[in-house]
Length: 331
Image (tube, rainbow, N blue to C red; front, side, top):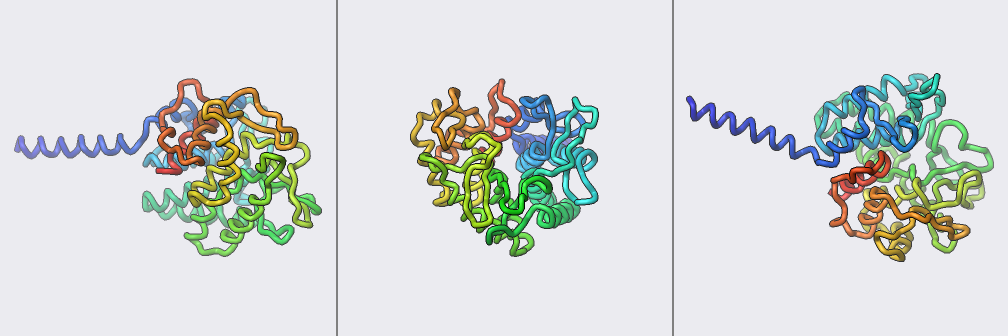
């Protein structure tokens, strides 16, 4: 009997060890810094606001780290606090310092897509049909409210309001979530996801602005199909656009669409790459890439050995999220 109890104890300890190993050190660090007890992720560099981007990033990381309890807290907070039943999407921002904490009812399409992708992966990983149904419902709302036909292309508007100006639309190419769109198409076989993927990839390859030939954070698409950096935003390849090669590489590693980013980053020493560049003037940031942006650079160049899931002590929310996503994108 003692031998049986000993064997059972070893089995239990082994299972506990396996579960512990399923969650990386970086995920534990990330949760301790940015996850509130109620499931809200705080953007530490932005007055501790929360947004659907942060919830979506973190829901993905919870799936990758096999952390269902945290996934549920993240999703339940967003569903309770940000969900807009009348449109089936999520208000993009929560400000704990404001009188009306969800003052802007617009959505951010990337946040909704990240959440829908995470729900789809969670439904498959944990064999939970309710997650899958929630993803399908959110996907349908995104198509209804954010996906439009313009200039002969299927494109995704960054939000319901404020980006369709009739003669032109404003796009954010860092919202082109190619691996999510690919997953949606593989799940549903709805042509809209393939059209969105193919047309946005084609548009992206035309966003070769300035001498550096890079896309900017925000882009104008006109009715005649022409593209330019969007007015009202700095014409920079910067904190938004750095996600473009991450998503490209994640969807199809080594795609030729990565070459402008590869060429640009190969022109700088790894630890002395400017955080942004103005594609029109050539002016650069006088400080280097954050650890998370550096991780995106590394996976884009195939230097995966440089990317770990251990976060630096003083790194903020966005950089930390990018580093962990870059790490998992090549796992």
